[in-house]
Image 1 (cartoon, helix red, strand yellow):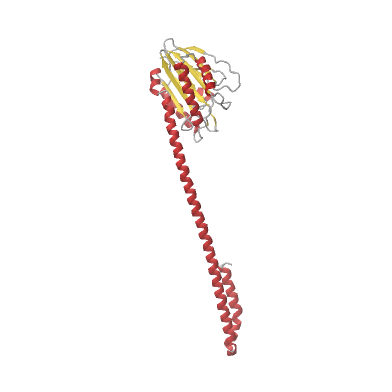
Image 2: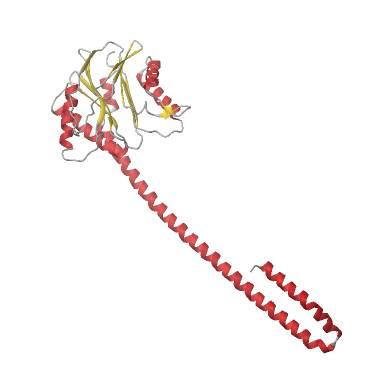
Length: 340
């Protein structure tokens, strides 16, 4: 019962008692009856006051209980938030440390400057660490250059990239296999040894493009696992396609050997190697993929620019295209001018 309803009952009671009170004023004989009415009204009001007091007390208790429960829940949520924040920071710190380890194993930008008169590397991991990586090395008159896209991104891709970097080192630097197609064949053998008797996905492996450039003869050799090589000459793109074979562990499929391609380079030729992250990024006014056709058109429109300037243009173009859309994959683009 609300206070408003209780007050109405009091008024009704007084209204009903009022005629008796008036009659009592006329006759002294009715004095006792008046006293009874007054007593009854007093008792009623006392009970009413007690009822209202208890009702208000219960309401306050319920409110206090609700407030205490909310306070406990708020403290629990804050505690969980602090725990999650602490764990997130630990994970982020670990990933940043892993990024430094991964970068330490990559070819240094200064080494690229020694290999090529003009070059660039555009690398944009989706997460702190990524599965796209590059590798370059000069041995005598030969320059080795690879652009690699490992399965997935983030931590799984980063682990796969470390395996790929070690296989490049073993096959080329230790075993001294210098023909690109044979390098990829030997890397498949290495993957089989690493993943022997292990349950791996059918897509665990790497798509890549590998070039070997002879600085004396200006001859370029190339082999690819899905990823092509773009050669820009006289404002035209010559696309050299790789084989539809992944570099990775054997999953019960017959794998043929990779094909080796040879190209005689000319002065001012520019080569481009890349993962699929740039072409597959969603964006633009309709939220569609950038696609390779648009990517090739962009390269032709900037091919006369110095390669270091091309990197900035490609980076800006991708940021403008992507807008507020999340990056969907690691991005890697390498450009180089092998012959002056």
